[in-house]
Every structure is written in C-alpha cells, then in structure tokens.
Length: 486
Image (cartoon, rainbow, N blue to C red; front, side):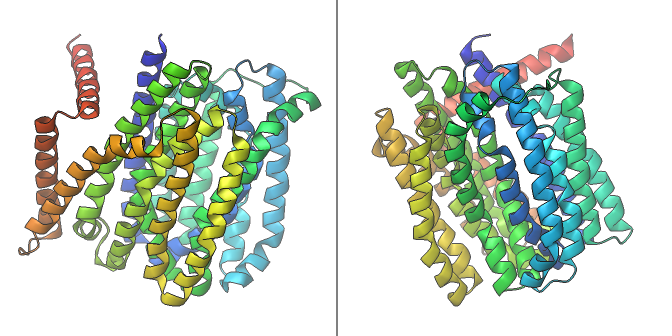
C-alpha cells in the first residue's frame, strides 16, 4: 500500500473511529445529561485536571518518541511499557492519598471518594499504551475503531443503567473505569505484542532525550487546557462547572476530536517522509487545507445552531451552557491547525522549540485568566479565544519557517473556506431569528440552510480541497455500495 493510500485509509478509519465513538458518546451523554444534574457533571470535571496531568506523566513523551523513531526494537517497547506501568501505579497511589486535600481545596466533601476510585484508571490505562503506539506507527486504525466502539457502547450502557437507578455521580465513575478496562483488554486481545523481561537504560535515555521535552510541553499544555476546570471549580460553583464541561463536550465533538484524527494520522505520515523535503511540504499543505475545511464546516455550524441544539437534545435546564459552547467553538477553530504545525516541529526534532513556545504562551495567558476571574465566568471563557489565536500565530510562525510554508501562506490557503462557512452559518442563523419554531424544527431548518448554501458556494468557486474531500467521500460511498451488491 502506497503512502497516499495508507494516509487516506488511516484518515478514513481514524475519522470513523472518532465519529462513531463520538456519536455513541454524544448520544450516551445526552441521555446522562437528562438523568443527572449539572453539579454531578461538575464533580467529575474537578477530577479531570488531575487525571489528564497524570496521564501525560505516565506517557512522558515516550509514545511520540516511539512513533518518530524509524526502527523500534522489542527492547524499546518493553522498556517504555515497564516505565508506564510503574509510573501509573505511583501516580494512582499519590492521587488516592491526596484525595482528601484536593476535596478540601474545592470545598466538595463528595469529591474525595470519587477521586480515589477514579485514580484506578491510571493503572488500567498504563497497561495498553504500547499496543496503541504500535497501531499508530502502522497507521492502522481499523482495530482501534472496533475497540473504541465496543468500549463506548458497553461502558455507556452501564452508565445509563446506573444513572437511571439513582447512582448519581457514581454512574459517571463506573462508565469511565469500564471504558478504560474494555479498551485495555481489547488492545491486548487484538494485538500480538507482549513485553519481554528487559529494561534498557540506553533505550530509555535515547527515547527520553526527545520525549522529555514533549513531556514538559504536554504537562504545560494539559495544565492550561484544564486550568479552567480548576479556576471555575474553585472560584465559581460546581453547577457552573457542569455547564462549562457540557459545553466543552459539545465543542470537542468537532474541533478536538477532529484534531485527534489529524494528530494520529498526520504525525506518523509526516515522520515517515521526514527526509524528503518536497513531499513533506506537499503533504503538510494538503493536511492544513483539507482538515481546516472540515473544522470550519463543523465548528461554525455548531456556533450557528448552539441554542436549538442544546435545548432539543438535553433540555432547557442546560440553556446557560449555550454561550460557553459558542465561545469555546470559536477558540477551538485555531486548535487543529495549531496541532498540525506542532506536529511539523516534532517531525523536525524541534521538541525544545515546542517547549519554549509552550512556556512563553502560557505565561502570556496567566494575566488573561486572572482578569477573567475578577470580571466573571463569561469573560474568563472569552479569554480563551485570544489565547488560542496567539498560540496559533506563534507556533505557525516557527513551523512554517522550518519548511518554507510561512504563516501568511497558511492563512491565505484557508481564508476562502473560512469565509464561505462563516457566511453560510451567519445567514442560517439570521434568517430564523424572526420566527418562533420549536427547537427541533429550528435546528433542522438552520442545518438545511447552512448545508445547501455552503455546498452551493463551494461548487461555484470550485475550491480545490472541497473537490478533493468530495471525491474521497464519493469514492468511499461507491466502494460501500459495490460491496453491498456482492
């Protein structure tokens, strides 16, 4: 299979993985949102910052170092496996012991037992990181798609049952742990790799020299990504945190989950051709143009339809989450292209540059966050837009310079698709303001107007990346129909 075929296949299966998994998670989330309260979701949100930071430490950048390394040995994989496992156990123990102090910080007594039980997820996750890395190196996401769907469905059904039976926040805890357990178990079942009884210091030093900088960078990034959970939980209320976390889930349905597709496929693809400057630049530009088109279509559509979407799906009690959804979606537009640019810096081995950028950017964000605490939660979330834009400009500047695809050229390449999507979303929003339909009817009409207008404009201007994506989609549909006829 050629690199182009592997890339398209990887994107297809990774996209199916994320979309199918997210559709299930989204549907399950809707049901749980109707059964549970915003404060119960807020309680789980308070555990998120500690879990995500711990997960970054467990991986320590080794996963990306293994993906980048051309010829990994069994010794490399086993060394990282044992490191992941030991660190996972240590961090789970630390969280268990410190749960009381964390609960006291948030002034939430119910948080202590929740965090103690949730911490077990760190041990479960550490068992299967290498299996996932091996599949990513092969650009093989078909197996991961199956695993993701099975785990999401199984854990979701259990979570819904427990919520219906009145277990409250514990239904979310059970769903989280069961999802990790199913993923870990199935990865061991579907992959043949098993660790050998060897830990190599040389292998550890080699991988850590690259991964350590990514570790610090990821920690800073994860801390920043979750600092809003910490700040809102501390200075506002668990209910407002619940609205915020629900808004994040709506936003992540498009921007962040699509970014995970881009990262999982683009990094190993770009790494495999890192020595061919011409092909590297060509693929880099294609990745940015095609993926940002998808980001614009989905994110701007969400901004336009946020109110009827939320009311229709999870009820009026979640209406205060609408402004958060819109603000977070605007900020989220810059995230995918920022991560593509960051992948290029990784491919070029510039992990130290990434680290320096993350440190400077997070220092800049501190006064914006502090100002938001004093002005109010809406201003706090609005600050994310400014921070996200500044981050893209800085990372895009350095990555573009490494391969002669400068920031001005990037912006020029994606400007047309943004203008078309923004115009279509605005018209779809404004046309229905004078009318008072039910949330379901309003949502359907807005989506229809948005889709028809955007497609018509793309067809008229004949945007290249639109035609490429349309042809890929049509080819996949034809293949599917041929298989059914057989």
